[in-house]
Image (cartoon, rainbow, N blue to C red; front, top):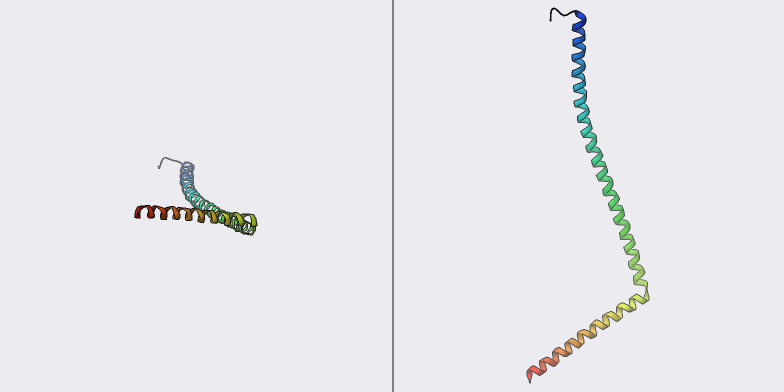
Length: 107
């Protein structure tokens, strides 16, 4: 390197330090980019969780409102009473048939 002129030595030093600086900057940029990606993913996940919770809460409020409306509707209440009575009658008929079968088996 003794045969190099001072200008050539300075150019080599500047180019070498520029390359080292560029490589260092790229490595730091890559690391910072990964950190930014993680923050974006975490923030997006948290925002989606909040959105889901708020939508589920809204659906629950709608369900409660609908249940109250159905409970206050006399037509639906009467229909449910009739269905219960029909089920009881069907069970009573099944029980009566069961008793008849037992009587037949006893004789």
